[in-house]
Amino acid sequence: MNQVIAIKRLNHYYREGRSQRQILFGIDLDIYPKEVVILTGASGSGKTTLLSLIGCMRSVQEGSLKVLDRELKGANEIQRMQIRRGIGYVFQHFNLLDFMTVQQNVMVSLELQDDFTPQKAKSQSSQILKAVGLGQHLNAYPRDLSGGQKQRVAIARALVHRPRLLLADEPTSALDRQTGQEVTELMTTLAKEQGSAVLIVTHDSRIFGASDRIVRMEDGKLDVDYEGQVSVTLPTLTDKQLIQLIPRLKMLTFQPGEIVIRQGDVADRFYILIEGEIEIIQESSGSESKLLKTLGPNNSFGEIGLLQRSKRTATVRAANDAAIKVIAIERSDFFEMVVNSKMTHALLDYQAIQLLHQDEQLRHDESKLYVSSTESHD
Image (cartoon, rainbow, N blue to C red; front, top):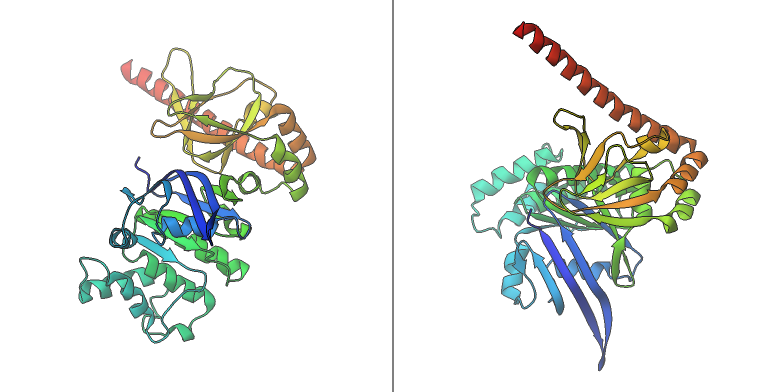
């Protein structure tokens, strides 16, 4: 699977008089089609600089930065402008033109495309505005809209030309909690339906659940936001419990097809998937292995053997198309976590029961199929 964004050892500097100050340090980041990645971190950590480089607003100084299969290191302004046409942008302050109608604001984005025609632009803008729930407001002006409606117009404008990449800079900062969550869900859902990758820069932890992955920028360096990832997957943990747990976590990488958990082994860890896909497989002697479930980012696994204090009941492996990254929690830390949080224990119990039920249903269906086949043969 080709990356929409591929960054390797990216450094960036700001000049201060005769000297220079380094802002970004050895950034590595890959983002794939239909993936939603949230970039968070304190003000001044380098988030805006990284976003401006990805958005082709600045020149790449050191390292490699590929966007939409084009290398930006050494690219001139004309080349960067061509790449920008394939990117959608959503800003925190909407940036709508007050003297234009809602539909005209969206059509502006299409005028830069090579295949632009007024008729096609009118049709496409109408369709995307209906998709964001503004089909009745085509001829309204921005001043007539609420903050949430304005951001919906901005989302429509960013997605109307079906970009492969959508960049959003603090898209919920001017919105209340509920409206922010609604427009984020709308934006990410529409983008995924179009096959777009999404990179959101935000401080708003309320929208972390809309992501496939959360990365944190700190002092110009990029790392996984462990607290954000765990809180999205296990929302029942308190802030105090998260703070105690975070230093004990381990990040592990598994290559495509590599086994993470093997059926029959002693259960020793609980896992949270943060990148890639896994396959949960039921193995039985004398017959083919059966795929129980496929899971993507922000899902957990490995709790059944731990909760039942038994051996692993299924095999878990990385899917064949890409490597995976998981957060691993050791057995002792897992038990401390579920003992101190009854809600977390209940959540994991429920997930385990669901998977066991799926396994039992599969076995039941296979049994019926076998009996039916035998009776037919007789």
